[in-house]
Amino acid sequence: MIAAATFAVTFNWQCMLLGAVLFGLGLVGFLARRNLIIMFLSTEVMLQGVLVNLLGFNRLYPTSLNGQSFALFLLVVAAVEAAIGLGLIVLLFRLRRTLDSEAWRSMKG
Image (cartoon, rainbow, N blue to C red; front, side, top):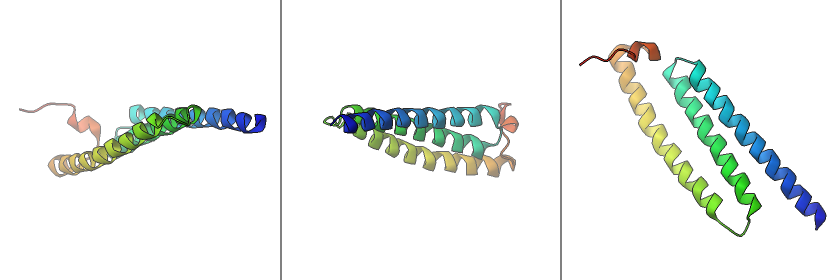
C-alpha cells in the first residue's frame, strides 16, 4: 500500500512539473514571437499545460470528478478557441497579406 501511495505522489509531482513546463514554454512562445500562427499555437500549448495540471490535481482526490470535469470543459473551450482563432487569422491574412503582428498595431477607422 505504501508503494502505491509513493507512486501517486511521484506521478502527481511529475504531472505538475510537466504542466508548468508546458505553460512556461507557451508563455515564452507567445511573448517572443510576432507571427500570429505561432502566437496562436503558443496559447494552445498554455491551455494544454493547464489541462495537465488539472488532471494532476485530480489525482490527489480520486473520488472527486472536479478535475476531470474542468479538464473536459477546458478541452471544449480550446476547440472553440481554435476554430475562432484560425478563422480570424485567415481573415487577417486576407486583409493585409501578412501574419506579422506588428502590421496590426495601428488602428484604422
